[in-house]
Length: 431
Image (cartoon, rainbow, N blue to C red):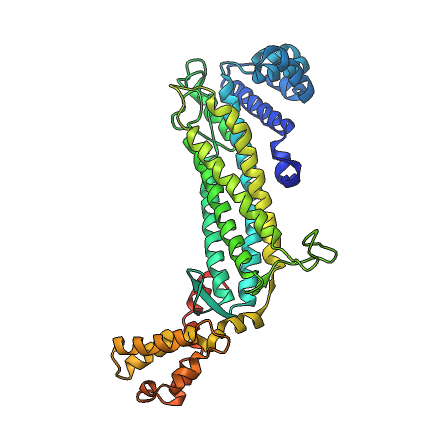
């Protein structure tokens, strides 16, 4: 991932240095397990733990010659350890270390994502609390429908991110899996107890049945989970972009002092963060497709997944983290314009209260078919006219007057009728 979108909390977990550090963690954990079971001398493990180290530049230098990253790493480590180094990597294959260490990186990445997701949860909850009574128009097909509140809209966002929190929690269990089972997963040259003990030291569970690799359905699920989270963030961003349109202007991204919206048009205040999040979601979603293609490997293993994962796993983690940080700040500092919401709600004389008028007429004895004809005629007469006034037309219609008093007509235009059952939703979400 380019530096522009790499924040240090996540970016540091995907450096070569951090990767090699996890490799060394795995090798040492295996040595400790081997010693615990009596396969290698305890003194050798003490020596290994005291001396083991690596130099990322030296590893690359060796790799340029041997064309194998794990051999290069082990060669460099042994340059530090000396004689006891012969016990490192005993009975292992490269993927034992690579896949188990990758699990450590993914678990650490999830910890960062979970912490940032919690910040987004709190930002959305706070705004929902502030605006639980801020009335606005709900829209379907992009067209005015019936009244809601901005807090209710945010309640839907909150419910969605809470589901993502549950998904990430499940991923922490699903991806925290290691394998120390040898060349094709049969433990031919390594005791299964070594795997059990080493994984316990690393905070992982042994894979149920590995081949030379941990099956890539786990990693595909991981990236798909991030893609789904990114898709939700995109949903929120698209909503903000729509509500910020000049002809709507019910919410707006915070515009900082000194910020410029356009090199040509000084008046512009563009939803650039929401647009950025929309574009980023496309990238994360497409990484999910690559992760799915990585599942089908030849026989017990090939390396067709390897090159792709070097790109998609760090990129997906880094970009999702950046999106969460951006989305949190965007929601936290969102500018909300209740007066514009009220203005839009009452366009064309409150035409959005048509269903309430329809149902009230039916309750008072008019057939639904006749009531629909009357209400639709008044609504369409008011629609898209500068002086259109649905409320006035309904009030003056003789057919309506036969069934409804002036007070009953007025009651049809009270938005609170549409909001009276929202409290149980807020209570479910702690708003």
